Picture 1 (cartoon, one colour):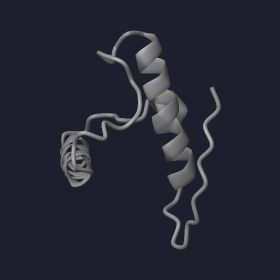
Picture 2 (cartoon, helix red, strand yellow; picture 1 turned 180 degrees about the vertical axis):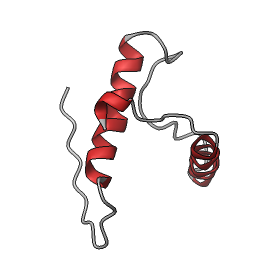
Picture 3 (cartoon, one colour; picture 1 turned 90 degrees about the vertical axis):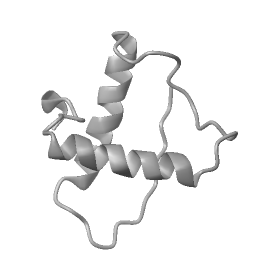
Picture 4 (cartoon, one colour; picture 1 turned 135 degrees about the horizontal axis):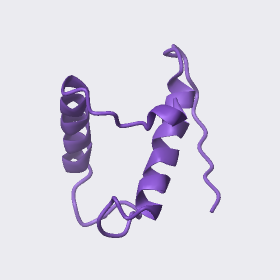
Length: 76
């Protein structure tokens, strides 16, 4: 598998790029361990894009408030 991700960062947050890769590697590891149910795949085009965007932002912020580690500490 090849992951190619290009992004222009105009006002970088410290460790933002490292955290982004850590997040993806954590997801890959969890999927390999069977901790993520279903097939981790692409975006479901049957759902209007604002809905998953809103869900991701909402649940992501909630997870941060509850101190849930989205990125495995060994990937930080």
